[in-house]
Amino acid sequence: MSQIFHRSTNTVSKVTLFGAVFFVGALGWVFAELDRSSYNTGQGVVIKQPVPFSHDHHTAALGIDCRYCHSSVEESASAGIPPIATCMNCHKQVWADSPMLEPVRRSYADREPIRWERIHDLPDFVYFDHSIHVAKGVGCATCHGRVDQMPLVFQAESLQMEWCLECHREPERFVRPRSELVNMTWKAPGGRAGQRRLGSELVAEYHIQSKLNCSVCHR
Image (cartoon, rainbow, N blue to C red; front, side, top):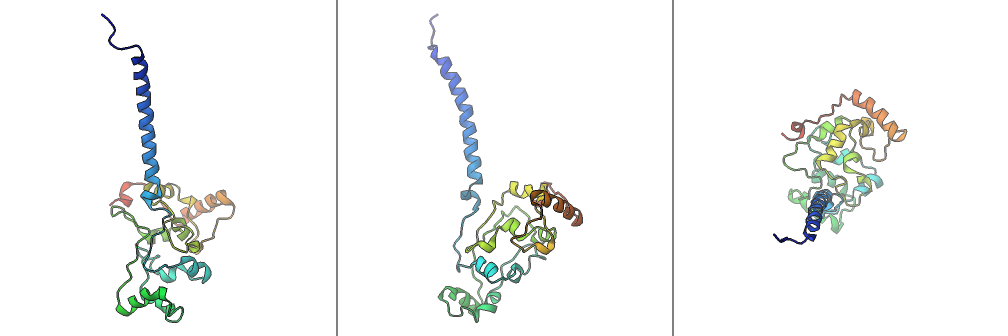
């Protein structure tokens, strides 16, 4: 019986099989990169707000403590957005006639809140309590980045589950003394080794548990 397929068909078949494996692998890599990209996570993306509020001006330049505006961070599940009256405590006298602050003045006069665009927006299926993390020594900069250097605030981290688990698995790498929570420039003495030594002590002192069960965050 004569040969139906040419001998080169065997080579083509082998190349096709190996090529399919590499193609699937490459496709998986592309999807993984897209999943971690700012296009998907929003990391590093500046979102336009009704008023271009400058965090670096208010914190680094003027020395306003984070908790003056975000007064509920230590006791509430949410950091909270300050009421417009907090803004007007200063802006009744400072830049009182600035056109840029007209939405603020109008909001105060009409008793209608400004519709800010949320930056750190976790999915609805994720449970997160801000006060717990603050109580356990997680500083502002750990999650929010150097907001004191942001003219317009943006999401500094990916907020993906793998990022959360990095801290939950090894909290000693991230926790700090409660007295340094709002200190954006604080670093543990001794570099990484010093952070681990101090972090391990704080983990014991603050009774921090490495909670990795799914139900901790997904309830």
